[in-house]
Length: 330
Ligand SMILES: NC(=O)c1ccc[n+]([C@@H]2O[C@H](COP(=O)([O-])OP(=O)(O)OC[C@H]3O[C@@H](n4cnc5c(N)ncnc54)[C@H](OP(=O)(O)O)[C@@H]3O)[C@@H](O)[C@H]2O)c1
Image 1 (tube, rainbow, N blue to C red):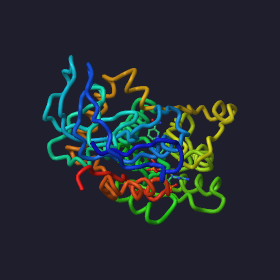
Image 2: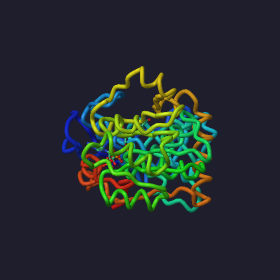
Image 3: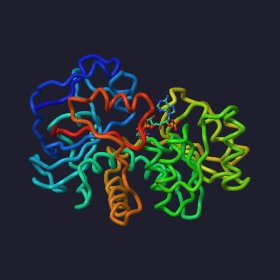
Image 4: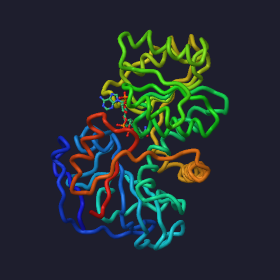
């Protein structure tokens, strides 16, 4: 089968299209004929060797896919051959065939395209767990989403709106502001401004009042995280999702105490391993939101597998507006 292969960690230019043996499903595993796979920021980190979990080399990258179940291993009960599914894996999605544990496979709504299925996996579950499981988001609360036109960010905007929250989207350009607005953000604040520390808080207060936001969902880190912390309400919750900006910020314990805030981490892959039933319930709610038209993955661009360089570069270069998708058929 054709697959993208990383033999040595390094820049995305190290990724090569190659012919590799197709995998076979073991007990509890599902073999999927991959139709589409989406690019996530963590894929870039896995490829360059800086992600927290790294596979043995050589490996096929890619965490998010959709396709048709080709075969199931012994004991599989959750899906059957021929079913259209979206699925997640630690690596292996950028290939014509991929094996995943059955608990990571979810039936796709009938009207969902394969491209949408690949785009709606990891980032929507991450957004859902950040908002519901970690932050306890309730209707009527306000949520500041940073990096709000990126994969996790745009999903968090949509999921927060679907939960009945008000959303302030923080983005770095006018183009990204338009995308966040079109996905339902009530207010947009810009992060490409001088004196971000003061400007972000002022703009958030203008949008939601001087109390600040109840929840921050932050996939960006760095200066954006530091500034966001100042815009949180008394008893607010800040969910740390990632560090796309490159710097892992630090929080002073005194600030957490004085403001009565909670600073909370989220790592979705651990939930997949430790609490699969909870993940399935979240995915079911996300599919229901999709059916109700409350969430809609934004597929910004689709590339055939041989154009993987352009697909990966769009995410690496901070150009993704929603999701970039690889399709297996040319
Ligand atoms: N915790 C989890 O379970 C989990 C799951 C999935 C992803 N993540 C993490 O979440 C973060 C976002 O992932 P994603 O797939 O949504 O990425 P993405 O689509 O590339 O979005 C990242 C956003 O971060 C902002 N950003 C700021 N500085 C950046 C830089 N130097 N390079 C790239 N982006 C920058 C950009 O927004 P602006 O231009 O508007 O600032 C961009 O839209 C990553 O750190 C990823 O590792 C965590």
